[in-house]
Image (cartoon, rainbow, N blue to C red; front, side, top):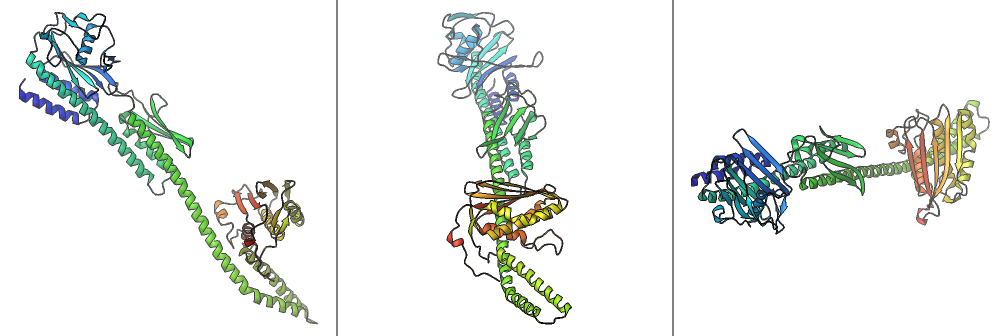
Amino acid sequence: MMEHDFFTFARALAQLANQGQTRRDFLCEASQMLLALTGCDEIELRGKDGRLLFRWEFRLQPGLHRHFEILTGVRNAAGRLLPCSNDDSAFEQLCCDVLSGSISAPASFLTEHGSFWTGDTSVPVKVILRANASHPAQMAHFGKEYQSLALIPFALSTEDVGLLHLKSRQPLFFTLEQIVRYEEIAQTLGMAMATRRTQAALHERNKELKCLYGIMQVAMRPEGALEEILQGIVRLLPPAMQHPECAAARIIFDKNSYLTRGFQESTPRLAADIVVGGLQRGSIAVTYWEEKDALESDTFLEEEQSLLDAVASQIALIIARQRAEREKAKLQEQLRHADRLATIGQLAAGIAHELNEPLANILGFAQLARKAPELPRQTEQDIEKIVASSLHAREIIKKLLTFARQVPPSKSEVDLNQLVTHGLYFLEARFAKQGVTLELSLTPNLPKITADATQLQQVLVNLAVNSLHAMPEGGCLTIKTLADEGHVTLVVADTGIGMSEEVKQQLFLPFFTTKDVGQGTGLGLPVVHGIVTSHGGTIHVNSELGHGARFTIKLPIGELPENEKSTNDEYF
């Protein structure tokens, strides 16, 4: 072998290793290069490459032959795991000793670097096998197919070792000079195998980084629905696996599944849980729908498990971020709603104050005019209409002032059960006439609250009348009182026509009404909302079209702070 041939081989092998091919493809091409360089008939390679121990055979004549097997490995006296079969044959034990650097044989069969070679396998060789302490001196037999062979150890790393086994059918095929050169080739092969593993690992890390970057892009899409994001993520997982051509993935979240083609419930598979807020909400799984190459490393890499864990964490962050964004949007809408209410309240209070004086004059002069003697019948009727309209306008202004919280509540101890019973007394006839059944469920011994009884009665009557309007064909009106820690609860529920989400969003806006013109002022529910909040309470609405409505009012038990007890002058 010429010096030029060696350097050409070393350069080609290095280029091959830098491609980061699969182990099978690399070994096929490297074996062909070795056969061409050495002129041997067959190449056998043993290696410990990471956690994988294997034996590889390759020849071109007669007929292409490629064979590999996974080895269980044998530990030598130093505890190192070697790529050998665990049997008692002298040849396997010879391989162990060559790999361990502890072989003892006639000098004509050994090199100073510990390689073993022979040009006549028909003659057994007496060797001292340290791998077999009970029978150290044995005659090693090598079979009859190949006349010349060489066992050359090499290193892949400080921990991993390999063995190059050259075979030829010709006797006396090798010379000592060639074996020494092949030892250099074996070391070059070891470095190339280590480089290939590094390049392959780098290629896998690149795929994983590309996957994570893709997930980031999917997650950052504006207005992206969670379903679209999860479907986008699951499509990015198979290309990140070491065998993307037969990989399939699935994401389960809240019982919804997102799959790629070919996913099957099988083992082995890689999996990670999706945990949001300390609760498992789903999982990620990756599997192969075709049997993978056993010559490669483990079915799944440790880094791939780390990738799936990272993806699960990213999904949890995406879900938490979307929930935070929804809550933020909801709070912003509540702030805008509160600002609108405050602005409208200020406007309503201003209008009410401005109208108060002229309206009082109109009402006063109309009442004086009504007392004039001998008024014509038509004039008297017209004055009555002026008085009635003025009184109606005064009630509207009172509602505006109540909505704007310009009318101070007159608070005292109130029994909510008693208020409900008395407040509905005058509506019972309307219930019966309209075919509405009233069901009361009043919790006995309900704690008393500090409130304005008149205003709370207005709340009850407004809600009850609204329920009547929602049940023109009859139905059932349910009124409940409940007590829990620190609060009493009033529930008004009907089986009426219900309302849409759009209507619910505007329900407490002043002057908003779904009734026909002249049928309502649009102030009833805003006034209810204002009264409840002025008492430190809350009001919530649950409703769907065709499924009735349910109003839940919570009022605190006990005295309100002094600074919330207004002492403004009364109107009218």
